[in-house]
Amino acid sequence: MSDLALLIPITAIAIGPVSWIANNWLRARHGYPPLDYRSSRRRRGGAAETDLEAERKIMLLTNENDKLTGQVSRLEERIAVLERIATDPAERTAREIEALRDR
Image 1 (cartoon, rainbow, N blue to C red):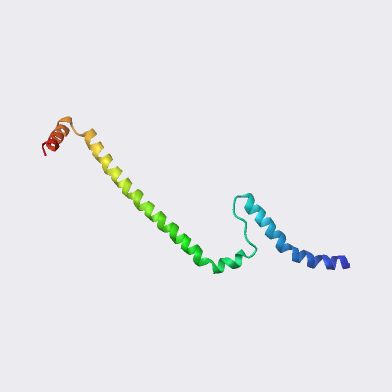
Image 2 (tube, rainbow, N blue to C red; image 1 turned 30 degrees about the vertical axis):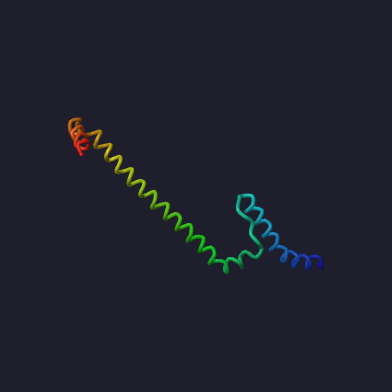
């Protein structure tokens, strides 16, 4: 009976480290960085750093989105001109080209 009484507290104490090792093994196996044993405590204090990184990423994505939106609008304008050239009668297109040459 004394062996069982000694085994229960040892098992209770060992559950934490064993689960931490299993968690890190699974994270490493699936390509995630392993956690520090104090990472949950650090997350509470390091939230400002994570917020700054998130804001920086949002700003970069917003700038890229604005750039791509401008590029798409320019391409749409060019496509509209090409469609107009393709669908207009030849005489009208020739007159417009001559008018541009006369300028």
